[in-house]
Length: 248
Image 1 (cartoon, rainbow, N blue to C red):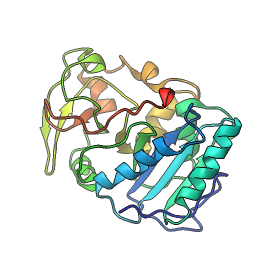
Image 2 (cartoon, one colour):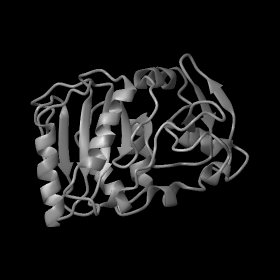
Image 3 (cartoon, rainbow, N blue to C red):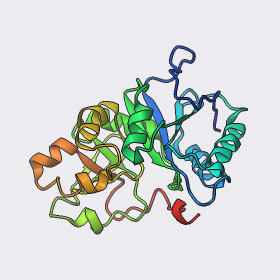
Image 4 (cartoon, helix red, strand yellow):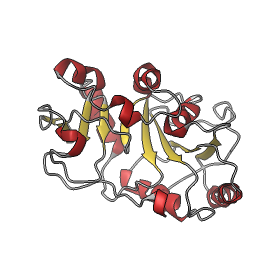
């Protein structure tokens, strides 16, 4: 069951007004797409959060990049109306276009939780698991810094096949994780400090994070810095799907 909150699309500081679970903040990033003013795409992603079994006091931010198209503004009105009955959702909107990096930077400006789960608006979850058990595993093994939830089975393909780092299995208390040299901005869990201390320092607003970071994990020493793993063991089935916002 999803439990949401009041909204504030002006990105003001909500922390003085509401109390949240300080362990995790969920950030769903969004931008203007052809299907707006419909909210059907992001609505599917929001509702897919029920697969995660997260506590009801988890803060959820719908982080929106800037656009002043009339259909985008109408979409934000529709989205605001959709979440009004609920308890812990907030809408933020950038004051200028920042692409994914700037959008996340804007959302993080008032996030105080230890962990963040970054989700794209067209990548809903399709498999049930417990997000706090993943956090337990990350706390248990600090080498796991970036956990990606895959939209394909866990195989050596694409940016996961850049070198021979792929495939090491880490069996933690709750789940197994597959090491990868690929850094992806697809749905992922990490420490908030991981973004503030590494990612947002290496990526500028307007950059494609994958383009900036891809290929940097060339050896074990670099992997220790970025700590990229895929949720689940080798060959495990996909956890998310792509609903393709650009063509929605």
